[in-house]
Amino acid sequence: MGNLYRFVEPLILLELSRTPGASGYDLLERLTTHSLTGTTIDKAAVYRTLCLLESQGMAEVEHLDSVRGAGKKAYKLTRQGREHLVEWGAILGNLAKGLSDFSHDVSALESDSSLP
Amino acid sequence: MGNLYRFVEPLILLELSRTPGASGYDLLERLTTHSLTGTTIDKAAVYRTLCLLESQGMAEVEHLDSVRGAGKKAYKLTRQGREHLVEWGAILGNLAKGLSDFSHDVSALESDSSLP
DNA sequence: CCCTTCTGGATGTATCATGCATCCAATGAC
DNA sequence: GTCATTGGATGCATGATACATCCAGAAGGG
Picture 1 (tube, rainbow over the protein chains, first blue to last red):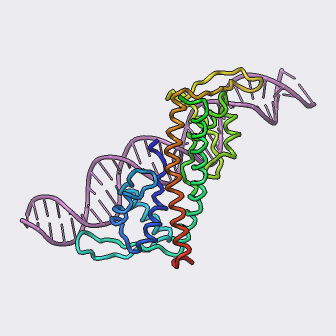
Picture 2 (cartoon, protein in one colour):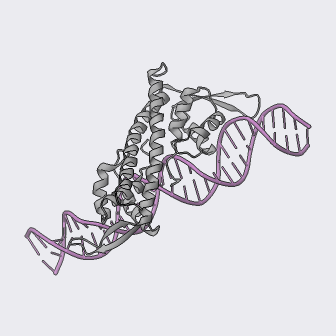
Picture 3 (cartoon, rainbow over the protein chains, first blue to last red):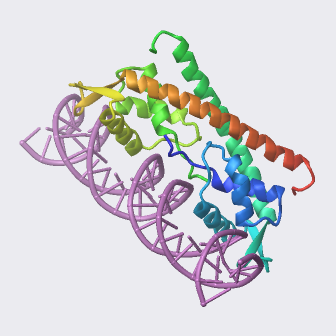
């Protein structure tokens, strides 16, 4: 049951929308607490998602000569990225409704007779 | 965005809990409308999930000599299966809450300034 | 009897998202 | 020079799914 979809893309889009100019590293820190599924989000997933978003025109990158470490990248959402986030908002809103119903249905069964 | 988790296992557990003795074919019919993600559920996913549930002791099978067609199978949840369904109920209830918050956060951004 | 269609069910293979481990580059501390 | 730290990327395996295909038995038409 630990195999749920982790919603990495929508979470990143939201975080980028809130803090434009964030790097992968920055996002990683913020998303530890943010995960929808109660688990943490993998380093690799974050970096790969950022690359993907860029290649799809959802995000733009700027190379920063950081004080420390290698070439840090600052990401910003494009208009397309913001639109995509809004789509995600709608989709996940619907999913939330469905899951909530599901959960209530299960609870109803429990309080019935059937369960231990 | 069509790549969400489809929640096949929990949906099947719930349906089996409601209609004990259902077959894969029966479930397929019911789950077309039931899907949480708005898409339909694949034949293959249903049959494979049923096999899995059986192999894990979540469901028991009885072979039926159906009037028509090949060996139909009637599935029933075991106690363990019912317990597993309850776990899913809790997990998906939490996820629903998180997704709902996410969706509201996105709506809040929209009504702000940032969006088109 | 042969052919088609329908009820069920199962399998093959590709893809996507992820987990875990590992690796690379630059930099400042020592 | 050596080493830990900041950032980032890659290799490989796995789980869940989509899509197509296949198999077996039963009815029905011809």
